[in-house]
Length: 191
View 1 (tube, rainbow, N blue to C red):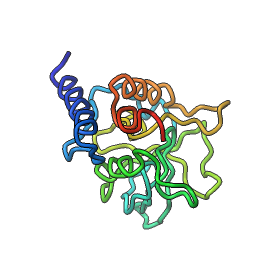
View 2 (view 1 turned 120 degrees about the vertical axis):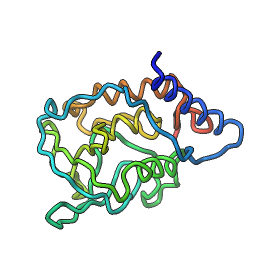
View 3 (view 1 turned 45 degrees about the horizontal axis):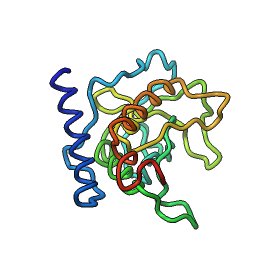
View 4 (view 1 turned 90 degrees about the horizontal axis):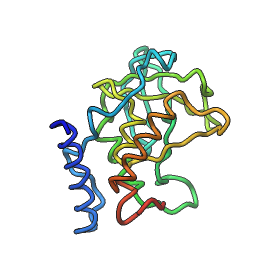
């Protein structure tokens, strides 16, 4: 096991111990995911890419952005779903606030890549752009969130999974095996 992998495993373990021992609901400030996680190259996705600035975090899978030309939009991240925090008439779900904090810690106020997936719709039923977000280090946020246990793999149209679905599913499986995030106490995989 490489040094980076050991550090990633140690961080996930520390988060799990924190949740069990103290009931804390915040990821540590230095929480990160494995930099060695497999990621599909963006050229393989085949989508259109642009650099945007994240100006606000709605929840763990939705952000507000400003494009390089000054256009503003709301983006729903492709391939994941996080526990609810803002849905009307729905109580805040287990690990929802932590998923929001995870996204905020990685993306809020930062310039990131935004990539379309030709296999997916451009816009969802709520008028949000459907896009992958690319972290400054080049990783797919969807994979990072699933690996951290901040999100579940999600396919909107079961007959048409997103291009990165395999990578996201693999990351989710690693999180489940490690009991990371929503897969550990107190959620244990429930919402």
